[in-house]
Image (cartoon, rainbow, N blue to C red):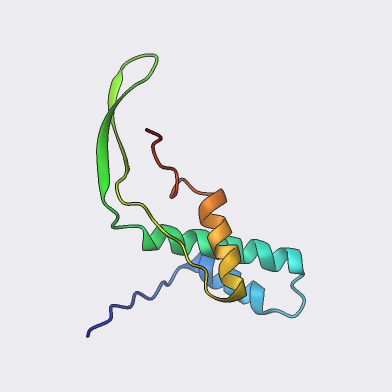
Amino acid sequence: MSVKVNKLSHPIVNSQLSKLRQSSTSPKEFREGVNHIGLILGLEASRNLEEQSFDGKTPVASFKGTVIKPRIGLTPILRAGLGMTDALVRDSCLLNYPRN
């Protein structure tokens, strides 16, 4: 079985990781850093999700929009994973599903 691994090399992630490692980082700063990293990782991980088209209407005109087709489950691993999951649930549009 072959496992595909993607290594994320991003300046913001590198900077946040460095801040998390410092002994002078406060608990609040640590939580915020984990949140930022989680959001970036989630956006990268969701890059190839299927989209579904829909027809919408603005006050001015009609438009063609998209929503994420599959339903997504998030499972945090260890305690730091909870902060990363929070970033995706609260701070992004990743888990916003159309309501039928």
